[in-house]
Length: 65
Image (cartoon, rainbow, N blue to C red):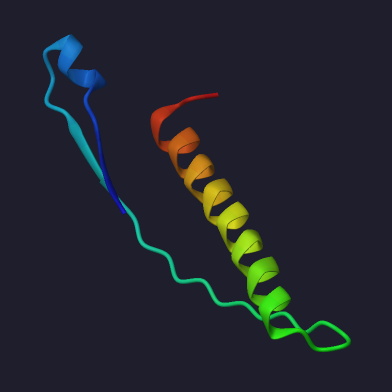
């Protein structure tokens, strides 16, 4: 993921480029097995986790606390 923080430009400094990568793996097995529901639940969980990771990166790198 790449993003640019343009806020330093207001102080006459160049914008900052931030880059990070991530790899996620997951699995879910429901009983009884329902592959379609497993995919839906895993997809929702991954989206939640990725959102939290991006939030933490932005918070720490950009001092958003």
